[in-house]
Image (cartoon, rainbow, N blue to C red):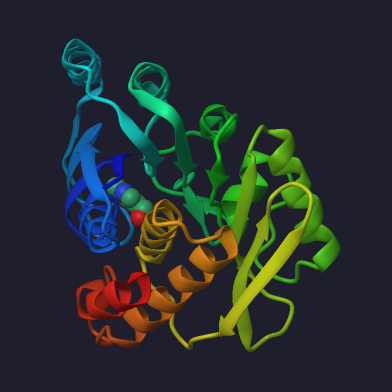
Amino acid sequence: MKRLLTIQDISCVGQCSTTVALPLISACGVECAILPPAILSNHTGGFKTWSFADLTGELGNVEKKWVEQGIKFDAFYTGYVCESHIDPILSIVRTCSNEGALRFVDPAMADNGKLYTGFADDFPSKMARLCDGADYVLPNLTEAAFLTNSEVKLSGYTQEEIESLIAKLHRLGAKNVILTGVSFDSDKLGSAISDGSKIEYDFNQRLARMSHGTGDVFASVFAGAVMRGKTALEAAALAADIVCEAINATSDDHWYGVSFEKVMPSLVNAIG
Ligand code: PXL
């Protein structure tokens, strides 16, 4: 069994980041180790208030113990992180990689044209350092625009604009780009998957509602599926199907995340 380390916050309540990644990656049949660089009472996307305990100072201690014991990983998947976490993360990747270890980067920092609360305007340039050399980078359109200093548009991207954003993301050093939130047709929503030489598209029927935490569900299933041997296109298509199924399984009054728990059997079946 492959072992993946996910490095992203624990939002104790809110169905995002580590509390989504751990169950979904485990359901894919991949051992999932975690390293939370911060612990929040709940996420920052719609709750009125939150506590935030920063664990930057602990990251080096954890790394030291892993190095002492020869603990290494087949993959790293980073999500929501802060500026102070970036150097310690890059150090852990350097010292704790098995040969050929893969790096998945979900630059979780923005959506709907805006940076998440708490991130400074220059944070995207820090996140870009994590994207450099990553095997798979999975931004939404807003994150892609911030990462590449491009115009931030809420909708109306042409195929040419999408492909130009992707080219700029490769120039940051991303080997494969999975750009989410792509739409050329009002009733379809999907992703563009690029390996640097060809761009493929995957679309689903657009759903009436959007939900918090869907980017984390997408990235977690994508990483788990790639680790189980799926191609990037197959993994993106499966991740999108699971996100749609999870949104449909979520009751209208459940506003802070998606009920991905209800679709775990589908994921297990699809991964085989
Ligand atoms: O889902 C991304 C995410 C992760 N972690 C925290 C967040 C968010 C988005 O708002 O606030 C703490």
